[in-house]
Length: 422
Image (cartoon, rainbow, N blue to C red):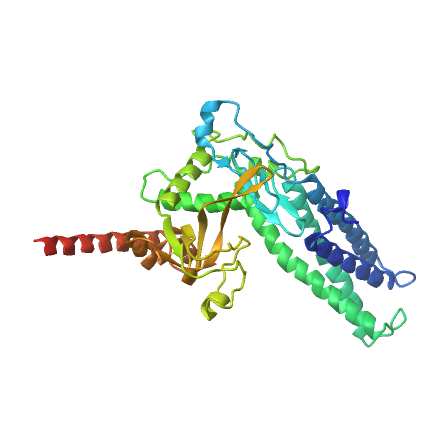
């Protein structure tokens, strides 16, 4: 079965989603069937018809989300005008430039058009061409599970009521199966409902999940400027919604050229991305590996704190040997993220850089400048961003505090050095 068109669906994500959908549908049909016949009423019939309709929509949009796909940039893609190459990032894996709003997915191993995120439940990325299908899948599954919960809970209340049952008493196994299905249905309403809420938020603002992160860093980077960074693709909530949602769920446009607001162009956001990348390279530090690392997701031999505080991300871990050099760009309390220096792996005649997380005790800074960065690594912008968003302190106050503390620390150090020289 796991070949040809079935290969995409024969993974744990789609199979688990189908198992949940099938379980809820079958148990809801069973509970509805108990009320058919002389004891039926209009509400029972209507709720059952609505549920069957929503179940069909859920399966239809689920399959289309998988097989329609997000849309991928062709290998070796370049913009029509060579002068626009300077505004775009180059993908070493696809050996081409990344179009505006496109990003490379490590799971799909391709550059995805208007990439939002990679969803394991559909074993595919959510992007330009399947964003509408994916949102419709979320909506139909949440509403369908609400109707399903109503039907099954009504059946369960009838079973435990003191009135005579209009059907034969169910077995213990049936009761357990119905209660389990109710739990699944309510779980879908809560979990998928939250995801649907965030998706609708992004659609109304015409932002992807990745662009939200880029815009947060852009606002942080341009905090001291008089003119804040403006998202170039948001042209009003109604226009933004029409860019994703429609009755047929088909996406408008080619996924490369986008309508932008006045005062912006196709490369407004990509220029900001390049500026952020440049700042990231400037704060990068070189580390030397002193303890080997196997690349395990939960290493036991590097300490209890390292084991209990892994990065909450699906980004890879890298295998390291003593003497390797790593260019570190992100710091956490017990983990570092970086790229092994001067090492690439050929994949399909393309060189792929080796990047990922590794335990902090495995490496030490190779220079005094790097050591200073290591000592103050908790002031890394990525860490500051996460701290701001998990505390009650306002962004502006904490930004001023971080920058102010760094400036005062640097000023005191310079003053002390000047006194020593005198």
